[in-house]
Image (tube, rainbow, N blue to C red; front, side):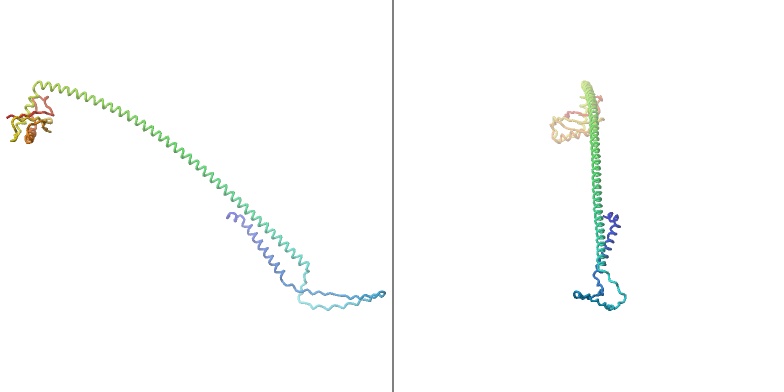
Length: 302
């Protein structure tokens, strides 16, 4: 509407001025029509005619006497004929009607123009809304295509990542299997080497035992323990206890455990203390007879 008012402001102002002028003319005509008119004095001359009897000539008409002069007025105004006033009124009414018709035509034209402008404005607004809706649809379609492309890219990236992880897992599995195979091979080699060493040690121990070096070493240990043993009063004759002794290289005793023993608790404790007091134990005559884990049968002399 602000655009419509700016475009037709001059026409609206002219129409309003025309209507005001028309109202002013109508008001003036009504005022003049209702105003009082001065009376018009008319002089009338009359003649009296007498009818003569048949056969006699008509008598001469008497001479008219001059009418008495009307008193003069100051600045007399000649009266307008009634016909001229009616004609003027009809002309003014016709002009008023013409102006009213013109104003009505202009009003209708303005209304028609306003309706045309409103229709054009509605059409422009509708076209704008349709264009905006089309733009929204286009943008939504583009956004949907972007989302689809992004989803497809993410899906492909996920598939690639899954394939990469699967390949890495497969490579790791193969590497683990290879490492496990190498560890198994190394363990088998170590076991075989240990078995070979054990067999060699057994053969060597057998050779040493056959030579009597091991028995000599055990008797030496038993004698050393007995020298460090403080016999308790509860020790009986025929005492015999099996000792399991663990020693470090150099003969240092690290652990003592008693197996079968026919002595009481005081006797057992005294024998264990004797082993610790004998530490470090003497070395064998033949180094091949040294054992970290010793089994000694302790039978003290009477």
